[in-house]
Length: 287
Image (cartoon, rainbow, N blue to C red; front, side):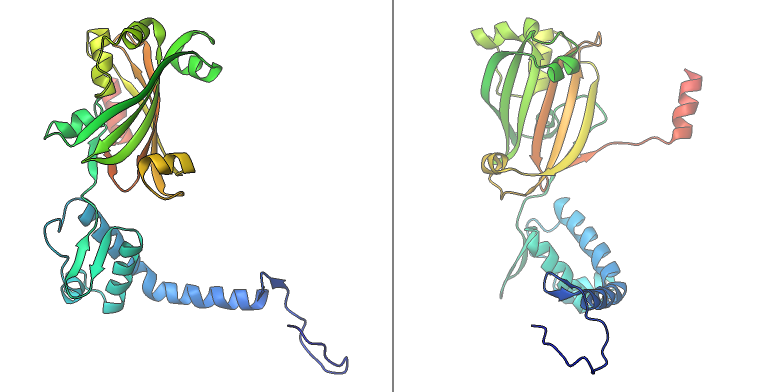
């Protein structure tokens, strides 16, 4: 509450109030926060990043994390930094601290999917043993919208096949996917049930084409889950998602699928090799 004062009392101008906090107080708070940040945040940032990457790469899946003292020695930082890091990882749902027992990794290590070649996550991961299962939840013929027609390089209004599916990792929902494919290639297989849709989309496409697939154009972005996506993936609304859109082409260059996927951001890591511009230019000149 701001009380009135006598006009004869000399005073500084009243601060502007924003959300119940005076601007002068806000600047002071920000200054103190920045000062604290220069002392603590750099080490907290890199330690939490490094430890989290170790955990999602598979470290400590069968045993508790090292003690605070061991982590202090390992990273060469203070106890306060380690406690802040463990608090951050706990808030992220990466670890759980059990009093009297230790600190444990909550989730299994993330899947690492190599983007260097045209293959699906299920093909990549299941080459080492079946962990990923795909279930088709919807398949039907529709008319292509202008947007989908442009992606598939067909005329607007032409028939397409729309397939929705869910990918499970060790029985846990990992991603949901909507795929759009030219009807002249896929409709008969969908309507007559002559092909198994409960598997890698790349395998389905190769069976239909009766040849290996060609190139894949891939885009990756991030978003927060909406209520429908959150319910299907078993996460909270606003949970971080990795989104991928891709155009799969046949060997002759024809676009045979456009798809949109939403995956849990805590379960999946994409990797590829980025070449230097000079190396790429040299390779181009030599070919």
